[in-house]
Length: 193
Image (tube, rainbow, N blue to C red; front, side, top):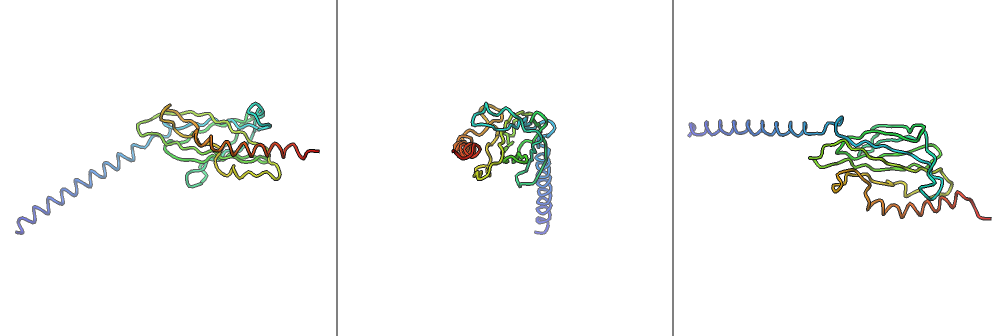
């Protein structure tokens, strides 16, 4: 019986070594399958404008020196950027992550844009997306609770194969934003005589 147990034990040991070696190789393959952030990324080209009226046409002034903070999924600061004299800033985000972009400038109400850079595993590309954000000056007594959540969500669209705004979310939040802007412009004009 002991003659039978020794070969069985040896066979189990060899099988265990082979299995653990295969698992290690698979794990190594998974870690190398991460996309190279120098080749594959999402580049955001942002223009930060000064909202002076209820229409997009009123957003002609740019906001120089606005701070763009990039926070990771755990709300830790990953990077900070500043808009140039034309109100523009450009930066790259790695794919397959989620970020919160906070746009701030002293004297203006801050806004948040959420970015979900997750793309299908078989998609390897360097994406470029243009995002315009309008900031408006702080006004006393304005309820800005709607701005505690993102004003937009940018995510990969499987149909187009590009990044785009989440249309469902945008439609939902736009109704709330219109109410806030109406109140803003009313407060900005001041009391009626």
